[in-house]
Length: 371
Image (tube, rainbow, N blue to C red; front, side):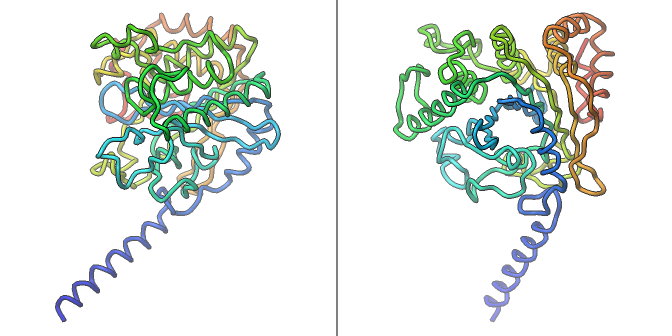
């Protein structure tokens, strides 16, 4: 009888806990964000073709964040985010309880940013594979002027890299080593650069780590792709090909009490929400030092190119536009960003984060690092 009683208590506790989780906003399988379709419909009135999605960093030290590529289908108008799978590294640690079917996951943009349900798998990671906005802010750099042929090339590349991952290939046309996720060698930023370089045939976009130099011990620290740095290179090269840009800020929902397996002791609302560092030194060393000019240049460039800012209301739990402004041309934004980046770095950092609508708390205020 005692055993049956214990089983009953365990079952009811687990069941009630699961039921409670389902009903809580900011949790996987919880209530959905309201008004998302209306927001997306407004955004889609613009004729962009691609969107580089830079996710803010959540670690305590210098944080590179994450980079994914959203592709808008010219026929169906559907937007699919292609994101390198952090857990597809064939390690024992990630062999169970994680989604590892593909190296590059393909997720509808609505689900990737705003979703509380995953179409991938029960093992998909909330805050990474879906519902990113509950865990961190994102910057979306929308790209205009990409042709249907270039988009087809990108989609074909993603099919190719996933097939090579399934076949456990090495030394392909786009990767010198094994086709498997590696934080330094084949990461999120590199996979985006590869899709544009090899898929869309934008050959001027830089691909690091594919030469004999990459075999030298320690070279991976220099040759690693970093999300913000890679994004700046992509924008520079695509601007020369006549592509244009604007920027969307998707602000983190600040009150999610969910904690995932990566940070079991920290709720999403307590995680850092840091602008992703440009310098690879921050990326591999976990340094808390930000390079003044490079990071401030990136922040200002994205701000001047900004068109919309989107947040989730704490009261209605609806997606809303915070701000709307005219985006500058890339040339104009570049000039202003360079000028501002040389000014007083600390005051600019504080002022810019306020402009972007990101609150500066002691836990995530990195402006003191700009000396």
